[in-house]
Image 1: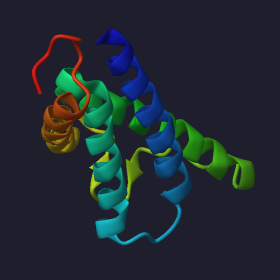
Image 2: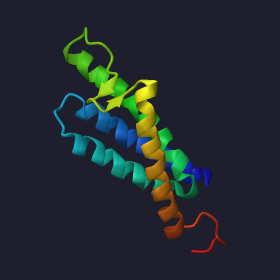
Image 3: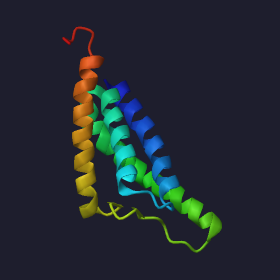
Length: 129
């Protein structure tokens, strides 16, 4: 179970970090900007199984911080005096009150994906399907 959780968090964090970092300067429509990460967070729940409700918010949080670092480095490569990136569009802000709703949505997506993931690939060998 722990292996599935670590695999889900690692894969999702890296993938979403590059998504946030590379799409930050682009005018991406909100449906696409949030739809792709929602699908990836659902898949993190599939991978993590029963711990999908934990894996998805943790992966989202890590990905936002790593994506912020990637985006900041990309910006500073072309404009050295650029401040650190603290938001991805108007909907994803790296501030605590603004971040609670996306973290809650990630937990719900992870829970739904985890329930489906447990049915498709049970964690324990004797688990019922």
